[in-house]
Image (cartoon, rainbow, N blue to C red; front, side):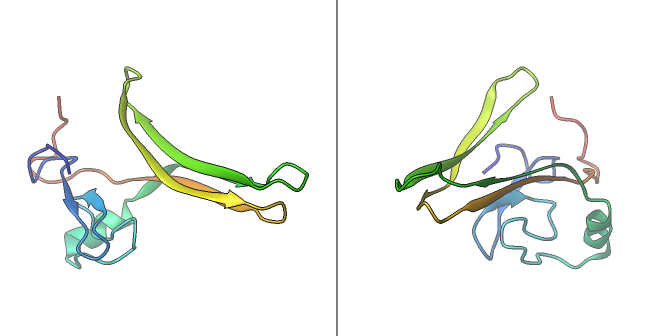
Length: 120
């Protein structure tokens, strides 16, 4: 959970459906897509959502009979290049006849409200 005070841009909470850590301002959980609130302000925020980054790739093991293992790791860095968070998102194995497709998408909405000032 975030150390940012509730009501401040970037503050987090736990999704009541899937227990993922999400933004306090979210009206829909980005992990389980469960709806969290239906007020007019929440609906307006959903309309202003943008996705400035989407990356998709497919893995197939090299030719041969070997099975390969994989780990999907997500790292987020700040403007100074310092790592803010690093998480293993998923792990698994690929047999020669299998493939996996991975999609990374970053969603952004404008922070609103009286405490939506830039954090220092």
